[in-house]
Length: 245
Image (cartoon, rainbow, N blue to C red; front, side):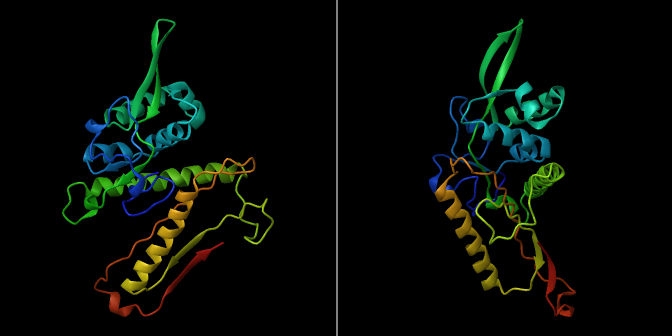
């Protein structure tokens, strides 16, 4: 869900964006942005928490069926309702979540929440050396990693993930894949690898989500980065194989 600018994945493509936003104040209460471009510290700080990311995930997944109450969000996350109020308010203050409806229930005003955007993208300038929001941007990325880790663990414990099926198995199989490698690449090959990954994400984005009866929820978490040479770089002459399943 949290994505850096230049990638196109299930969080949307900048070329197709109806609107972008650099801060919470620009999001009208009655409108939902197709894509929100994040460049301000306040929004980054709101994103730097796995539970708040989980709340956003639930609301974005439910956007087609309508807004949710705090109780419904808590049920979807299997978390105590009281634990969520502070996080929802922080998301609302940052303009990431909006109150879509209110009603009076037993004398208490009940709010129903909806996302203020269909996708999020981190602006590239926030990662520039000297950027005052660089640390906040990395915190948001680390929170996304923690969110994926927690979600993966929950599905694995529930035996809902398959890493035994071959990719050449029948269409009914759900072959998972795990790879962790470090290679020495030329800058040109690094750019080509990035382009190849972008092509995959653009293809998925162009296809859109499947409405087939046998469709499953697929999670693709991608992290690609090059490390600039350090003082000990000359002593390293071999590639470092990683792990794969």
